[in-house]
Length: 450
Image: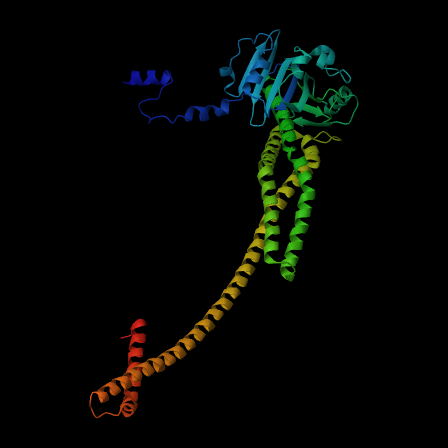
């Protein structure tokens, strides 16, 4: 039995000691291994392009990857995991990663000696092992493009290495720091777009730096810059909403003042508030995802920068300091705009509730007045009914007495000694009482009285 259990486990099945496996378990478990960092042998050149893939499907990306040397046999099944590392002759690798909103392409190849640390503003693209046409043909819209040179050097004197790195950047102002608690490497960049559309980064690490460490350094630098750009996608949206938000706030203040002064009808105010609320809710629906994505991307940027564990080089800003001064205001603008939208929506809801309360009170007053009119009408109707009943008693009594009179005359003609007028006059009280009594009984029966 033990042998059978071991065989099942070795074959990838579930041991008999476990319940049935959830179909999602393997995918969720392997998520931590979905995008392993590259192993980079220094000195190396990494050319990185991230594109927004809105409207681009995997088939288009697959067709483009097949244009790489030796990748004719690539299939759709190879791209189902959202990650693929391709080894291409004559000795470079291409890493493809598809994310929710963007796709990343990382090309890693040996660094040509002519563009090492002693060069000045070296041109890197002519040394690529892929054609410029392949780069330009990547499906999507470029959101981030970086040329990362990773060179070896002695870091015992960081100031001297930084001076050489500044010369590599053409003696331009740079941002630099030592990475790791022990300063195992140095990163230098200027965060500027070149005419080619690329940014530049330079990493200097001691000889003997492991390939895994170089891969992790590269991944963190490229990721935080990509997520920084993705986080900033919310900034143009926030700026575009600034004017309409200010107009909406002024409009709401005007409507509130009109409601307080009763300068407009409730229906007109309600129509204006409904239109204002619809516009704000539409803005929230259209831009809520973008604002939420900005918050998420900003958190990832902070995490990746924290993972660098920077140490400052005297006289030079670190990456975290630069980002704190340049990125934080933009993220604050996006957060402020989102808060303004939510707050304005809540204020409109409160104003609408006040207006509905005012309308309800006015409706209740109208109902009260209507009930008073109905009550007065019923009272008048009761008085009229009482008058009619009195007239009815008199009329019925008149006809009954007339019948008595005719009856008495008939009996007198028949020979009975009766005086018709005296007989009718004598019976008049009895007739009146009888008619009145009969009317009261009918009235009581109609009203359910015993």
